[in-house]
Image (tube, rainbow, N blue to C red; front, side, top):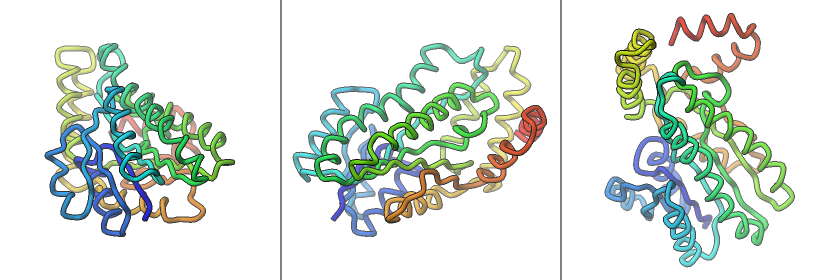
Length: 270
């Protein structure tokens, strides 16, 4: 039975992935700050662990606990993520740094702790949940997009470094996903721009986010979970899984259109 650790398991993609993996017979440890939100996962066989990815002691304790119980770790899914939308000018420096701490440095810390065990067993899969915003710029989401672009480069380098040890690194790059994060992002975007130079644009984008959420113009988290499981179970996983609503067409257009034309389209339809 393969042992899996997934962060950000209290809701959304993480919750659905933990549930699906447990149903398929994996030994799953779901990690998040809100342990009470993972209680329902216990009936599927998931073991909840309290984890704050911004706290070094919490990160070390999580890995120590898992290794003490299982003596191995086969799959690490770095799903915990954080995005605070707003114009680059409007977002405070500390808020920008926090996004990098959660979306990149916490990922790196967890990976560095599990790699010795994966090397020893000559097997492991590291699944990093990125975003289509790591492939194309996010309008009024520059800091979030920057963290995901960084995660893409980090994961590519890591894949090269660990492949000789039987360890695979996979990037999941979802498009728009229907989670509470969409509404929270819309609220934060409006709040950050209130009374400033970007208020009109921010209001328009926030309204668009809410409209897409209400009209189901976003993928169900369970859809993304299926691709994560597919990447784990595949003997020859792809390096990138671009999945979910609008991801493939937008990334394709970004690749083939002149940059300034794509910019116009992105601004028009955001």
